[in-house]
Amino acid sequence: MENIENAPFLREMVDTASNLYRLGWDERNGGNISYLLSEAEVADYLDVNHVLRRIPMDFDGSALAGKYFLVTGSGKYFKNVAKAPAENLGLIRIAAAGDGVEILWGYSDGGVPTSELPSHLMSHIARLSVNPKNRVVMHCHATHLLAMTFTHDLDERAFTRTLWQMCTECLVVFPDGVGVVPWLIPGTNEIGMATSDKMKETRLVVWPHHGIYGAGETMDETFGLIETAEKAAQVYTIVCAQGPIRQTISDRQLAELGESFGVEPKAGYLDLVRED
Ligand code: 13P
Ligand code: ZN
Image (tube, rainbow, N blue to C red):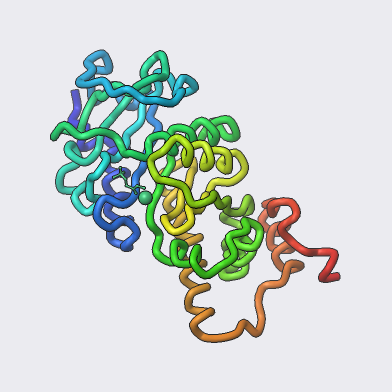
């Protein structure tokens, strides 16, 4: 068996957790990541028949039965992931009945997967139903996005339009916009259901006064998605501090941008008729 700490998927996870910490988006134990892996990827590094521990789940994960995920640990600090991956991360498989997880590696000090596992697994189910290539769900406390949830209208269309207007690349990176759920208790099935419901239509979901969820095919793509939205929120913060907006990207220009890059802005989010 090869050492799992050298596995490409593990290195990606470690790098991403370190970057999220470096950027200040995952203070203390803030944030969590789950990475869907194939059995073939995993089998080079561990005996898939050797279950270390079993943990029950009180929601139905049967749509993911038998699937493998690398998941950050609950209460673990992202700043520590690089120096102690086996303590701060774990590799799990969803039990055949969908009612628990089997730990195959990691959480070496007796830890458990993130408390946000319901939101992660439900979001994976939602994204896989739209795009079978989805593999990553990422949650962090991106500073400026979080701040925006205090000062900006929480209407999804309004929130999305502001982000699209702040950096030209935004519409190209997330033409499906951002979803916004109500304020809900973290770690619950309820916030999991609300988040995954939005994930059927968008890959970015804002949790007001808490943070953001992103989903994507690869670790880089998902990180880049959150990074792009967060950059737009940072620009918005600076723009608001500088004073009234004198000019912005028009809806006509956003439509042209979408056409030029071959992406479809979320239906109804641009006011084209009113501008003509
Ligand atoms: P965990 O430490 O359980 O992953 O929780 C962190 C967090 O960000 C909760 O939303
Ligand atoms: Zn959080």
